[in-house]
Amino acid sequence: MIQVRPLGLYVHIPWCVKKCPYCDFNSHQQKGELPETEYISHLLADLKNDLTYIEYEKQPRPITSVFIGGGTPSLFSPEGIATVITSIKNMTNTQDDIEITMEANPGTFEKERFQGFKDAGVNRISIGVQSYDATHLTRLGRIHNDAQAKSAVIHASALGLKSFNTDIMHGLPNQRLEQALDDLRVSIALDSPHISWYQLTIEPNTQFYSQPPTLPDDDILWSIQECGQRLLNDAGYQQYEISAYSKPEHASLHNLNYWRFGDYLGIGCGAHGKITNTEDSTVYRTVKVKHPRGYMDLTRSYRDSLSFVDANDLPFEFFMNKFRLAEACLKTDYEALTGGHRLPSSALAVLSELADKQLIVEDSKSWRMTAKGHRYLNDVLTAFI
Ligand SMILES: C[S@@+](CC[C@H](N)C(=O)[O-])C[C@H]1O[C@@H](n2cnc3c(N)ncnc32)[C@H](O)[C@@H]1O
Ligand code: SF4
Image 1: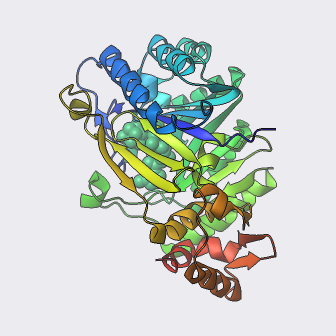
Image 2 (image 1 turned 60 degrees about the vertical axis):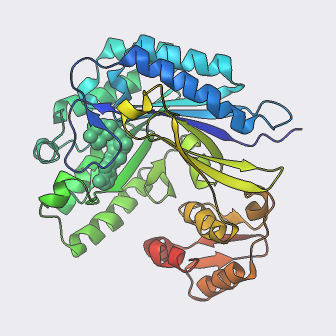
């Protein structure tokens, strides 16, 4: 049997109704009508170019997952999304059981539109709930209220998709432990099969950075983390990555592929891609032009940069992804996933030191992060630099 090397496809749609004060993603406030048709034609031309990266393969390499992210892709029409998905299927070799996720903001969630997205081929929706608490939603500058957040999840559930996710953030301005847990309790009660549970981070170049809100102190953050993990665990969710929790069979294949150091193409403004060429043992990254206007400028290329990952940087890049996961990292993975590189002795020395400190456990076949290692992940990773 031929083993399929997973290949993800990320599609970036950069517009939002309004920029949230904590967000540093490549998203721009919508001004006037969206150039939907024009942007889609650029996305498809961008994809056509990117397919040359995988042309050396003996047979067309199947796309195993698509993630339409943003920004707020649910601002596009179901017809537009149908064009994107149908074209991807026509232009590439897609697997029959492909996972196609689209991000959606509860403020753009009408029942008919979402049935339209499902008909267009979307089989997984990721809903940016953030919180079900009216006050916190206002503090976060969200365009939706608590009732809209709940109703988006209820509608997504009724659509009968392959799966769906609710994004919840914690450590919100002035948030108390019980409020953070209540947000999780609502997603659990609404039977969200996947919950991405992120701690709010204050990123440079955001409004929260220049006008910092009062965040909960470290003791509260610690309790939120401990109690939240227990709550999710008791409700039958498995934590398979630092911030990702799922019911059995509902892990995100697309995100798993990133963390497993798999390959992916990235189309749309600012999108990142990573490809491993097994013929010449190179791993390279592509980045597309960030601003929508520059990206849609026909006089320049969609690609802003292509850079090869230096062999010396590969251990850090590899473990930075792999050690986010709860699953074990097989010792054979490094060679298999980097196009044939051997793990250098310096990295092996770091791994044995980490095992001595009980940050990872090692057996004859694998390394696996411990709970303590996940807590100190940054320290673990800097050891590889
Ligand atoms: C790319 S955003 C897109 C989601 C969608 N546009 C929305 O907000 O409804 C994906 C998720 O990242 C999380 N996120 C964004 N900024 C964050 C920050 N500063 N700290 C923690 N999580 C963040 C949010 O949970 C968000 O839903
Ligand atoms: S809606 Fe999502 S992508 Fe847009 S600004 Fe807010 S968090 Fe960022």
